[in-house]
Image (cartoon, rainbow, N blue to C red; front, top):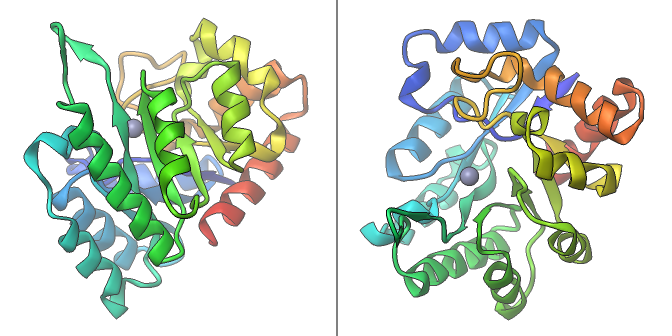
Length: 259
Ligand SMILES: [Zn+2]
């Protein structure tokens, strides 16, 4: 079986056919799903989905860096984490992180210092609640690693949708982080270069559905049922049997999220 460790089944893109999407994924061998929150509402939806699909869907609660300019309420995440009913449903803090990507000459996620504070607060939550972090990082690896070294302890976690270079991969390895690989591995030249260097013990699979649809479905909505296409491409790039990729990534995902 496969686990999709990062899928946004909580987004409205799936409002009309969510149950069918989950069913089709299961038919394709994708049996468990981690659904991260990015803001207040998507955290609630992730928790709702986890509660109606126990043992199948697991929730992350967190604020994406895009939320930084809106000053999101950390105490809300805390209230979710301390609610007894949610304890079995929440397996991670996230997604959170840094995004310095520029759009029309401006950092879309806003001021860096505000992003830093939001990330630090969520790293502390992860430590307090002994949960892994799902980290989003775009064009900001240097600052991300600096911040990880300033918190009292480094939580365990995953660099979701890994987009770094070889040095960033080494830094992630030193911190004991996993890296999540998505459907863009089927067409990204950068990833084709990096993936052969990723130790199998660090790899987890994710779709980031509805985004990052793999070849040959680009242009369509992405779905967790495409996880085997990502595994197939990884097997090619790592020159290993796909069975080995499946077993290792599933073992890693279970260890990371405690599922
Ligand atoms: Zn992300």
